[in-house]
Structures are given as structure tokens and as C-alpha cells.
Length: 338
Image (cartoon, rainbow, N blue to C red; front, top):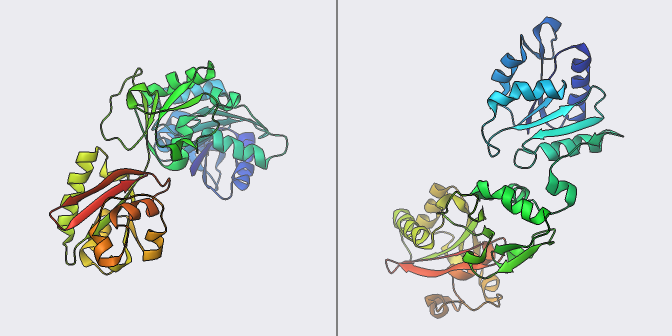
């Protein structure tokens, strides 16, 4: 995390120096009034000038100034909770910390907690209701797992339902649902139509407060191909597969295949062009799986349970096959899991 510490006088500058030492494992720049002639800080004439330099260049802004003044100064810069930086206000003694903006997605709550854990007696004045009441925060879940969020407009409604002790219907795989904590108020449902929250690799969804909140987990693909299959043809097959399954190619995390394909030039080139890791599994890896898979020519040629589907399961994080194997051009098979 890249942090800018904003100060306006000698006492706050001294506090900023101590704060920079406390956060020595972060990339921290101090900004202060040019009149102070500080050699270890970047100078500015007015706070507005400093914010022009800082906003959009840093992940977080820590301000050792009055909260009221800070709020007035940052107000014109605010755009969206998904893009605004974390803003944290700190007092001169560094023992009162207020995560003011972008508590979850921007990381302000986490940064404030880090500071308080490193300073004896420091108090984190977190105001996010889900943190205070101990209910699940779906934006935190998405951030910690590197998932995209769709229809962010629905987040407040969903969170308020939980805070008001109403159940939330979740459409996802059981393996993902089992990892969601705390479980209070969460109910797994079988169809998207029943859901308040959908955790699934969707490409298309509607932006509306009254539509489900969408969390988009990573997709893991298993791929089989004939000897000599070109990268371009595999890419064409992937585009067809992604379109028919309604997931976005940018959500693909990793690829898997059978070890006999580890020297397949087209497959290696395809993974490189896609910019993702590919891992190859041996016969024991594949045949030890207890899942039932679609009929495969791999059974006849290699005595394997399959290639695409087992590889997708093996490479995936939650071991749930979402997209059964599909064949393309009589030489490529693709399956997908989460």
C-alpha cells in the first residue's frame, strides 16, 4: 500500500515522522507546508494543492489535521467507493485513529487496525456497522479473495438486511458458501431468482439497488487438445466457451491439463498469451478424484478419468465444476470450475 501522510505544522510533521517509522513496511511519503522547509517531506502551499498531488496517486491518505477541515477539503474529490482511496484521520499523539473513507474496499479499516495494533493504547474509531456488529461484509470478502464486485449499488441494502437481522439468500456453490464467515443470517439457495447475493462468474448483470449483489470469483479452466493444436485455435475455442457459459475471460485465474500435454507448444503459447499459469497433472492426480466425469477419449488412450474436467477441479480453489466439458473443432476440450 502506498500512503501519503498529510500534515500542516511542526507538531503534525513530527507525528508524521513517527508514523512513518511505525509503518516502515509500507511505502510512505510525508507532505507538509513548504514554509517548514522539511528535507524529508514534500512541500505544498495549500491543502488543496497537496490533494491535487496526492489524490489518485496513493492507495491511502493519512491526515494529521482536524477531521472537519479534512472532510471539507476532500469533498470535491470524492467519486465512488470502488475507486476512492482510503482516508484515515489521526490525532497528534497517534492514539486516536478514524478510518474516514473507503473502509472496506479502499482498506482504511484494515490500515487503522494495523496502526492501532502497533501503538499501545491506540483506539480505532471504526464506524462501519458490519464491523461493529460482527456480520459479514461482502465487499471485504471480495477484496480479500481478489473477486470483482458487480452491482455495487446493492451492497448497502444487503448489509442493512443483515444488520436488521433479516436472512440473506446466497446463490453459489456449497464449497464457496462453506467458507463464508460469519454465517449469521446467510442462507444457501438453489436458484439465482431467489438470491439477494450471487457469487458466480457472471459476465452480464444489472446495476440496480433492487437487484442482487454480485461477487465474481475466479474461473479455473481444464483444457485438453490433440497433438499439434495451434494456440490461435485454442483461443477461438475459449472465446466460444466463455460466451456460452457467460463468464468474462479476465476472470480466468489458472489453467490445468494432463502432463502428457506439458510439451504441447500451442497450449503453452496460449497460456502465455492469456497471461495465466498452467499446471500439468499426472495420472495419479486425476484418477484419485472421486467425482464422476463426462465420457472421455482419455480413458481409452491414457486410462484416465478425463483431462478437461478433472484438471479444472484440480487447479481450482473451491473444487466445484461449474461448466462441464465442451468439445471444439474435434480437437479441443474445455471445462471450468471455481
